[in-house]
Structure formats: structure tokens, C-alpha cells
Length: 272
Ligand SMILES: C[S@@+](CC[C@H](N)C(=O)[O-])C[C@H]1O[C@@H](n2cnc3c(N)ncnc32)[C@H](O)[C@@H]1O
Image (cartoon, protein in one colour):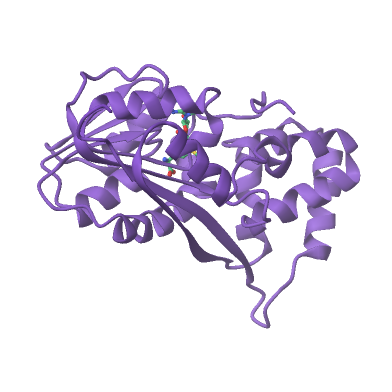
């Protein structure tokens, strides 16, 4: 199963925020509470996107500095707007070749990113290179295989019913390794010590069907990229199926569960 998809569209910051950034901003503080990093540290954030986790780091973790890295110039532009703090700077870069010196951070984190990186062991090796001995590495990804991203799962279920080719685009098929045991094994295998993981859950509530559907039409992210690629009649059929199948509360709102798996570990103080 291809892990990369031509629909992985990471350019338009405001559109991404309508689709995913609003949920990233909800899960990021819960992750930081679990990470329990001290104040006054130097942070590195990989795949910072539009800055949801960066903003939470500035607000809660009291960092001495934060370097956010992402390949998307459009997302970084948005992150700079959201985090106008002199302690923070944002650089274009790739998780597999981080553009920062060795041992230059105390903590390296990545929120909702690692599944999109082709060579995850290399990304973890890069995080270990840039974090000082004894420092912390932590990340989280959605529980795609366990159906833990309910609003995406609902979208793809209906998309695949109309278009069998969409089956291979679903995140649960693309990212089967996003289970807690496999993520812990990946992290421990990279050489980190004291590796631990946990589930972090939020409810994603949409005001009404339009609040659910409209972000999919904006083209930012894998499912919206697929949605935007459809001819208008196919998109309308998908919209109609979702409008019929999604569960509503009495006020017309739609609530679906979301769960991320978070993992943390410590960089060894010395080799051997
Ligand atoms: C789902 S978004 C998460 C963004 C942000 N961390 C958040 O929580 O909202 C995935 C991010 O990973 C970035 N990304 C994709 N491939 C990457 C790579 N090889 N190295 C670093 N970042 C990458 C994308 O540009 C995008 O910003």
C-alpha cells in the first residue's frame, strides 16, 4: 500500500486549519500535559504545519526557544502569524534531514506528522541527533487503523462506497502501523530509552452538516485533496450520502470521536 498520496496537499494554511488545524489545536495541549517537560527548554517541532502545536508549546511549556520545521512554505507563513513570539522561528525543512545542528534542542516533538514521512526510522534518528543526551522526544499520530479518527473514517466509508479506487486512499489502509505497539516498537528500535505511550481522546463536534462538509471541499489534506479532485456531480453524490449517514444530535450537530496515540522517550546519556 502506497503511504504517499497525490492528494496529500499541504499548502493553504487557512484551509488546513478549517479541516484539521482546529482539532490539532485541541489535542496539542493534552499531549503537552502528558509529556510533562520542564519550563525553560529549547524545543524543536518537526512538521509544525500551521502552528497548532507550536502555539500550545508557547502558551503552556514556557520554552526558552522553539524552532518549527516544515516543508510547506504556505503552512509556515500561517505558523508565523499564529506564533508572533521572538522566541520562535520557523524554517523550511524535512524530518529526514533536519536543518539544525546536532545537540541543539532539549525536546523534539512532532504532531500528526510521522505517518506522512517515508522513512520514519531516519526521522527518529534525526530527532535523536538534534536532541541533547538525556533530552525528550515525543510525537503523536491519529489512531487510523483503530477507526480513531471518526470524521475521516465516515468520509472515506462513503467515498469508497461510490468509488472503489478510494479504498486505497483511506488512512487506515495507508498507515496500518499507527497502532500503539508498533509505534512503541519503532521508537524503542530507534534507540530511545524509557519509551512509553498513551491514547489521547477528543470529541470532534461539528455545528451542523455544513460545518462538517465544507472543509472537505477546500482541498487541504488527503481527504479534502481527494474531494476537491472529484467532478462536481461525483462530489454532490458523496455529499448526499454523508448527509444521509452521519449521526445527528437533536440540535443538528454531529459529534464523532477522535483518538491519537502519543509516544515519548529519552535520548540516552551515552552510547553503550
Ligand atoms: C497533518 S499535518 C500536521 C501539522 C501540525 N503539526 C498540526 O498538528 O496541525 C502534517 C504536516 O506534516 C508535514 N510534512 C509532511 N511530510 C513531511 C516531512 N517529510 N518532513 C517534515 N514535515 C512533513 C506537512 O507539511 C504538514 O504540515
